[in-house]
Length: 478
Image (tube, rainbow, N blue to C red; front, side, top):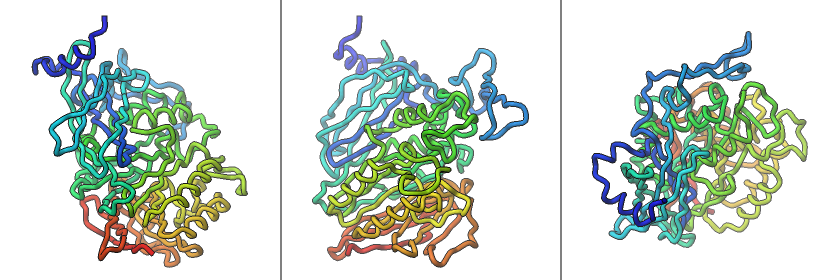
């Protein structure tokens, strides 16, 4: 017989502290995303243990076909130590069954709102997502996730997030952007320095532009793909940041499937893990609605567009022409329509990959590359025709700010999450016809939309991982 909702609620309140040690736990934290002025999605996941497995736990072994190795090598088998599974390996945070509910309130209020209890889904890595509605605009909310096993309550997890200002509110908004978060390139024992640094800015929201995790070398099964999310989002820096900052997530190649991938790509290197499975796992691991392309308004002066660059693209090796696409006809039509409908002072297109560049000559994967010239030209022409519209991009492992020589489109490449992950470009290769700023290093991008002397402004700043400002570009609304 199932306990009633009231019984679960009473159990959460009355369970002695000594029983909380049995779990369930939330070692991978919470994430709050897809926030508007009145709604938000809260992501949570139940874990078996209070912390992830120790780093010295056993590790999986990949057995390659003779003569092959590395991320493009063909795998013959995936081998675990006898009696162990993916749940037992180094840095994993295995999930567990149970129920969760979200409690939330404005930070200055006394009364909590609460959702119904819900089962986490074992087929979706023991995750659940709550959609919150009827929120107050431009408000900081406290959020608390309560957890129950069938007959035991685990520790609650507390956090906070901000809602967007209403579309007619000229409120000050600060947001930060990052990319390139390879696990092997952490720069402190508990994760990445950019996260506590960004928190000091008290951002209204954060956007991760993709390459959030890197599947290529190890994610040869769906279980190992989920393991990548577990180990990254059980890092203390990541947990603390996402427990307290509204976030949006965009995926790119490395957190879809493999390097420079597209839906019909044929590769033997990913073994039992497929492109289609990668699409599903991304949407289970971050707060996300039905579509991975969307626009969000943040007050009177700012609207952002986040585009999808993997689901609808043509093969990279297809000859360029009017039918070759990265975004697909439906997404492009949506982008043009919603941009034209917007009366925001500034319009910011946030793309997982470059649109302006410059990029390396041997790349064939984005709108700044010659292989997508036809669509790239159309996209740049459209952006250039809009008032106060700029591009922010991820993917490239260096920071740059550039202006397209022909159209004047401005692009801000945020740079990778750590200095260890920086590379792929020479600092000496400063191209006068494009670059206004270039730094081959890690860090992040921040932007502040605010009124100065009554006029809308948008100020972009490039930061080191420790927060030092390397370059600023201030825009005034026309």
